[in-house]
Amino acid sequence: MIAAVQTALDSILGNSPALNYAGGAGRIFELYIMTGIAVEMQNRGFQVWLQRSNGTRILPGSPNQIFIQRGGAPTGIPPASAGPGNASVIGMRRQNGAIWELWNGVQFTGRSGARHEIDIGLVPGSVGDELRIAGGCPFGRPRVAIECKDAATSGSVDEMRAFIARLYDLTVLTVHQPYLPTPLPTMAISPGSPNGPFYTARGTYWAENRHSFNGIARQSGFTAGALAMTAYYGVEWHPSISLNSGGYTTLIRAVCQWIENQIP
Amino acid sequence: MATIDPRLTPLIETLIASGADWLAVEILSEIRMGRVDEPSDAELREAREAVEMFRKEKTVPPPTLVTRHTNVRHLGGDEQIEFAANYAVERITQNIEMAGASLQQLNEVANRSIAHGDVPSDSARPKADIELRWLDTEGALNGPQTEEARAKLPALRKALSEWSISARKGTQN
Image (cartoon, rainbow over all chains, first blue to last red; front, top):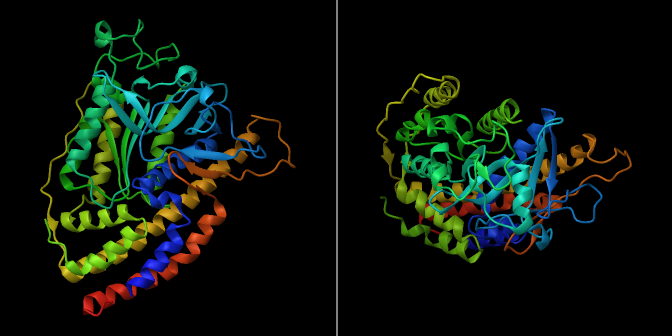
């Protein structure tokens, strides 16, 4: 009996590299959400494109049509000079609007100096351009931050605590300016942030939480106690994310509606 | 924490031998933790509406939700075996389906990016054929590979079902 299981497993897993390493299934889960956002933004009239790590676009007919996803470990943004062999991103802009980049598994630097992975993050394209000059991690917080949990175990209150703590460290407020290595005006993210009121740092965590989309997307659900902090910190819970599920549709619509309504 | 039934050992060893040690760990973790009550649809809707209010209101403090007690139910031996067999096949199936859907969506984005004027539109231009790769991981994934993997899933489902029945009857080999 178990030999038949082994044979069937080998024939499937041998052909699916993402299933052969720890975290591979989680990365696919993130990619499914990321690409869902991209398609929905196209449906809403945005220009959306796939972009290699050196900043060039992946177009049909080009010899290199490889979309590279980060593997197990999160990293910063590599320099463009390192070539197209690092992690790809998805670019988007509204008609005549600013360019934005959707990142997957990138480490952001917090005020403490610690680095935190954001599973799916939306940042100004100019931040990506600046980081691709020499490589590095952004300092501050993305406008969209989605924590992805591809686990059947229900999400606990600890999961919410961890995400809020990460956002807390990544939040740059105007009152932090005297302690920051970056010059005035205080921006929510750097380097390379565009100027303008949408991009400047807010005065309180409450205001910053409202000025961004923050969510936890789970394959399964949440334990009852986990919802207690969601309203206070403005973190959306999105359970039951599976293939074409109602939970998936709700998440994609919520994120894309926020992007369409808010970003310049 | 639940005690792991030793009849699961052959499946766990097989998963590890096939390179799916992550799946073995997940199954053991799920069983040890037990099944928990989840919020109802109404509670989740309430939580989402509360976040919406939080975003819209400028001066009113956001509403707080009442914390409920979470009940945990541990699985018995036969339930553990049935759970493990189902979990393994559903997890692999979902992953393959999501990988296939992601590839489709990547191709859609690449094809439609032309229509928005990034490059001159040309009906004779070839369609995108995106291949997925991962940093620090050997191999790649494309559309035909996901189709091939999908076609093999019924055999895995059948094998796991037969193992589950025999393990529960005490006749596994």
